[in-house]
Image 1 (cartoon, rainbow, N blue to C red):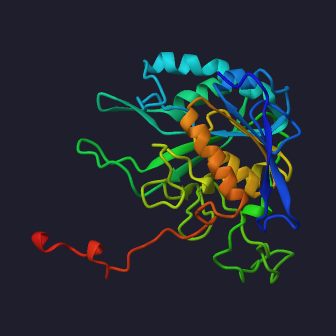
Image 2: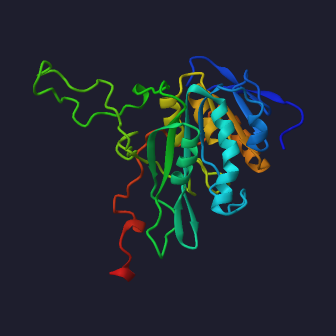
Image 3: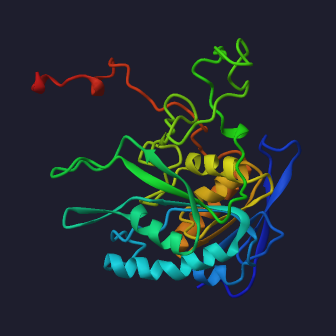
Length: 327
């Protein structure tokens, strides 16, 4: 359960994102006037206090029902049924021009894969949400399977509540492959055909080449050598949050994560001058989140830069060379 008494605090904020120093105000109960609401408890208890149509973006990675220490594994049908009341409340609090980004992987039972995004799609459509993109988040590390191909991607379902919604293309444009390309016929023949800010990234994004490219986001998952790694076993990369925040909200917008984990959504929102709301029922993760906010405020939180190319071995490293035993 959440805290019985509301508690707010101010954290000095001195990074270069804003033109002048400011503070991050943090409350452990819902308060629309603070920068961060970090609720120690289940999201259902927090959501009942949030007004309708007050959130610009819901972005989260819900429990996958795969038996992690922070979730109780049930049948797939029961898991989906239990999620519906939360989804209904999330849709209630999203603004008419707002969005929902639902990032999930696969539920695996006795070696059979059940893609959770397909099951959740049916639920969201019953609430009349409109799917704008099914984005693939690709990563290069994970468990090595022996009876099927190793899974190296998860999906993000981006829904909007209506046909009028926030979508800021310019902050997420990528450099064009051929910026000097010109129209070759018609009334604009000879004129530049592109945009000086870059091209629309379509709906497959390959982070290796630049920040965005097409429908696959190639963003490394948070493993042992990732600069953001904490004790959370399925940590959400801040870089993934930033892209959604920049494209789907305006400055000073409100971003909500009902399954806050160790606060990656909060950090991604703060980086770009948005307010953040999150619930987390694991006290250890709440403590880690508070520590991350403090470190971020003082410019000491390790973060992977937005759009940084993924490391590729040169072939000279010993670990990248074919071992003698295999030659």
